[in-house]
Structure formats: structure tokens, C-alpha cells
Length: 145
Image 1 (cartoon, one colour):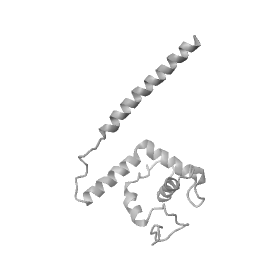
Image 2 (spheres, rainbow, N blue to C red):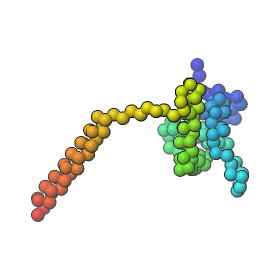
Image 3 (cartoon, one colour):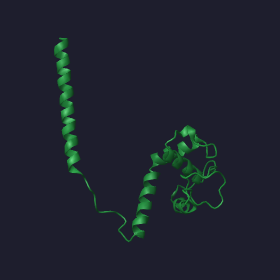
Image 4 (spheres, helix red, strand yellow):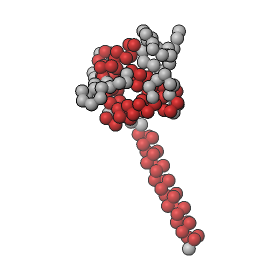
């Protein structure tokens, strides 16, 4: 079984992080449409997503994107712009809603879990750290005076 996605007519080498045709059909309507003013979009959003997913999957630097993907500056600009405008969160929320609806559940979950033990530990740790630093500063001040 191949780990490569199913792509009908690949125009370049296929990477395991690429979107399959089925995944692209789900994401395509959720992506921002061109504004209609200014220069027309010249990049393929599917290739932009493929570049972003390549960096996320491999952990490489933006500058090390393969040359058959769009330029790293373009891919990075789209990634940052979508983060700033909340596009990633909207995509996540919409896909979660679609999946929960398909599973026969309510769109929004009514359950939240908080680990109270870790919260108490964090508060205690924070207070003890502050006290240790304050004691060390006091000791330094006593020695230097």
C-alpha cells in the first residue's frame, strides 16, 4: 500500500504530504475567494497548501521547500496571512462541524475536560519559583552590601 495520495494528473513529483483529489475537493470551497480587485491570483491554492503541509510534515525550514513547489516566500506569505485573518481556525471549525454532522452528532461539542491537578501544580510551582528567586535576590543583596 502506497503512502502517496491519489492524484489524477500530477504535474510534478508527488510527496506524501500532498493533498489527495478527495481532500482537495473538501477544502477548495472553504478557502478564501479572490477579492475581484487588483491583480488576479496567479498561484494555485492547492500547491500553496501542499507547500505548507510539506513544511509541517517534514519540519524543514521554509527556505528548503522543494523547487517544484511554489516559491517559499509565497507559501509563507499565504500561511501567515491566513493565520492573521483566522482562516485556519475557520477551516478547522467548518471541517469539525461537517464531520460531526456526518457522524450524526451535534455540530458543537458540549463536553470540556480540564485536569484540575495540573492547574494546582502549575499555581504551586509558579509561587514557589517566585519565592526562590526572591530569596536568591535577597541573599545577593545581603552579600554585596
